[in-house]
Length: 112
Length: 111
Image (cartoon, rainbow over all chains, first blue to last red; front, side, top):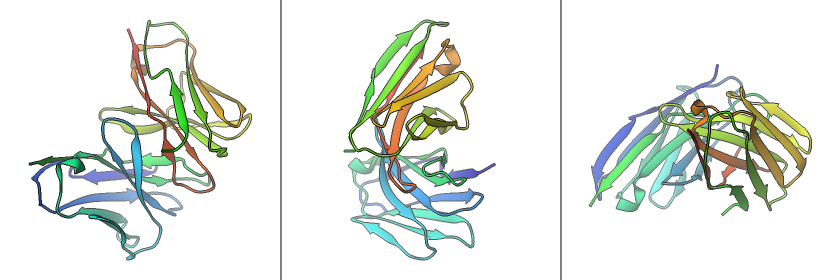
């Protein structure tokens, strides 16, 4: 059974702090790992990672994958209150597209 | 925003009644999915479709059925709703690839 585990489950920081969110996985026939941000509605896509060691970056967010150690991290620098959300990581299993196994999510709260 | 519309967005229904949730997409994507999201369980796949009339079960399919008669519409039916099916239901779509895009969600309460 495929498994995706995120840590920490929740995190409280102040604006300006840097945070690191973790995602480990055990997935048969691994091919990619995805990060989503969820505020009070639908998850929105952040990154898809397929290769080890290659950082993907979007503004203050960045992410990297380690296929040897089976984990990924999501970094957010200079956090803002608008970064408060649940961050989800997921990995597809099997041979069909989009059949994602999700982690439980990390609840990030950024205080002013 | 991905062109995905879910309806209804909120529904309260009684135990034992049938419920149908509709997902409509304007992206002409081949793949469509229904996920449910619950505290402590995260997002879990109920059913998915890889084309018109082509559907398959996901991780938590018991008590649910789906139909896809047109590329743009994917229906999720609870034949006889139970309290354990109180949840937020998300429709999602993808083209060729693993990145999926979610609809806004349907909040279902079974009383």
